[in-house]
Figure 1 (cartoon, rainbow, N blue to C red):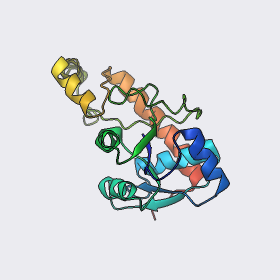
Figure 2: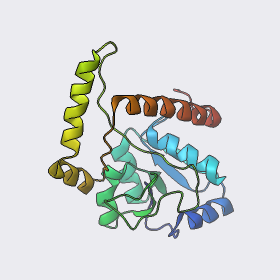
Figure 3: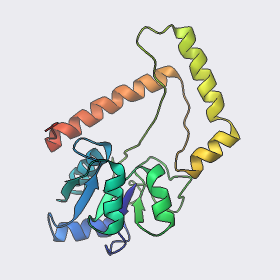
Figure 4: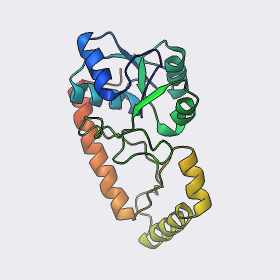
Length: 197
C-alpha cells in the first residue's frame, strides 16, 4: 500500500505524481533496505509514474514505517498488514493499495490501477514451500490442509482484520505464480540498476 505522511498535501496518487513531477528528487520514500520488496515497489512506481523520488533505505520495515509516521521521510510502499493500523489511526494517509483488488481491511482505498497506474500491482504474499523432491501426495495433503485452514471463517476473519486477503490455490498455481514473480521483478531490478551493494 502506498502511504504518505499526513503533512504531504497529496490526497490521491495523481496529486502525488503532480507534486513529485514539479520537484524532481525532492520527495523521499522509505524502505526496509536495498532490494527489499518496498524498495522494488518504489522503483516500479517511479518507472510507471515517470517521477524521480529519492530512496532512503532503513534497517528494516519497522524503522522505515516509523520514519514515515514521524515525517522524516515522505512516503513508503508498506505491507498492508503492517500499515493498516497506522492508516486507521491517521498517522499516515493511504493513497492506494498495490493489489489487483481493493483490500477488505480498507475498502475505501483504491487500487493503483483505479488510481491511474496500470501495472503497479505489488503484493506481499506468503506461501508454504517444501524441499525439492517432496512426494506429490505429501504436497497435496499439506495443500489440502492449508486450504482448509484458510477457508475457515475464524482464520479468514483474523487475516482480513490484519490486512491479508487469503487466496488459497493449488501447488501448480503457486509454482506458476512464483516463476512469474521472479521474471517480473528481475526486469525491475535490472531497469533500476539495483545491486546488493
